[in-house]
Length: 171
Image (cartoon, rainbow, N blue to C red; front, top):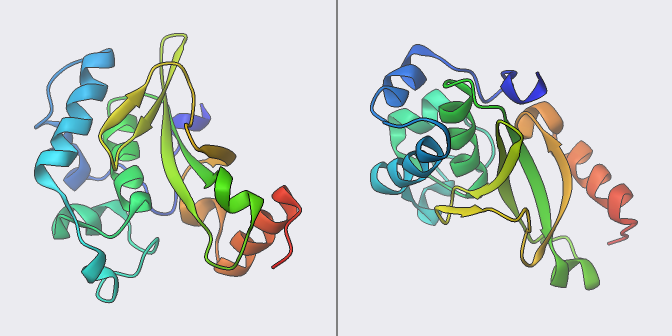
């Protein structure tokens, strides 16, 4: 199943399993507890982007540092905490609707996680600690789903090309 596959940045390692053992619950209760665990134990730091460039680290590096530099880091951590418990989960790259109306090189978007329990799909925003039960992305439009950032986009040129092609954008 695609949502259980490991990616370049999202491998279920012994360090990941150690984190999983700290989180209680099953099913939807586990999803909620994962979001609470991330909020309690990891911190966002925009200032750390020089030390930890965005979208480059694997989940072991995230766990060791306890520092998230953006929504991609939060999503990657959430993905492995779910997949390690055999909950299928996908990385979702989404773009702000207002940015799409007037695109420029400063891409505005957000990363979500789609988790599946039984026949139900839930949209998680690990950065905010939210679960969307109705499958809406608020002010965002999803572009692509996959395993993790580097598995989808091995380099920035591919990322920018796919964004431009998907939305027929020129900037």
